Amino acid sequence: MDEKKMLTEKEIQEAIEHINNMTHIEMASMWRFAPSGHVYFDRQYPTIFDAFKTRFDSFGGMTTEVSKEVGW
Image (cartoon, rainbow, N blue to C red):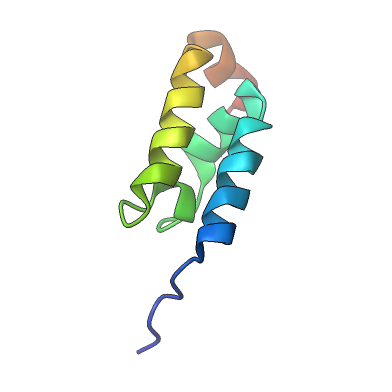
């Protein structure tokens, strides 16, 4: 069984920088369609998840309008 690669501090900061540059639509798509275990939602990296959730919530989260735009 393969062990999951641990992210370096640099990789964590790069992920947070990417999150900080995402649009509301990009974040909603990620929220809905990210594969299971995606690093942005991995509780092993709470700083990444917190950065994502805080920014997504600052846009209003999964609004009806955004939900319709990203579709299924």
